[in-house]
Amino acid sequence: MQAELYSVCAVILFALGLIAFLVKSGVFHKVLAINVMGIGVFMLLLATSAFYPNAIDPLTHGMVLTGIVVAVAGSALALNLATQIDLPSQSDEMARHDKPD
Image (tube, rainbow, N blue to C red; front, side, top):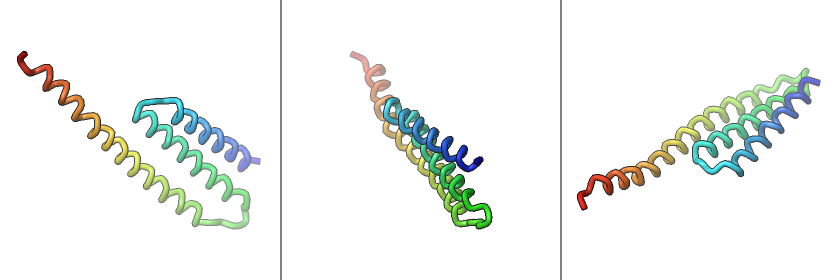
């Protein structure tokens, strides 16, 4: 019963992340939505491993832990790239305001 509840919550989390990814326009919001979708996938993996209570599968837990590390690194890279792309446009605006006419 509890595994089904976690599975349903995982699907809801994934759906909310997908909707936010499609609706929101900012880079930060899109990265956050992708992280929410990833959490839904991780939760679904762990919930499906609980369907077999007699068989303990450390592979699933190892995959989720590795996925969390990769998701954190990917989020940091995406946010860093987004700020690097946005920085030249801000410095160009400052340079235009500092120039005497």
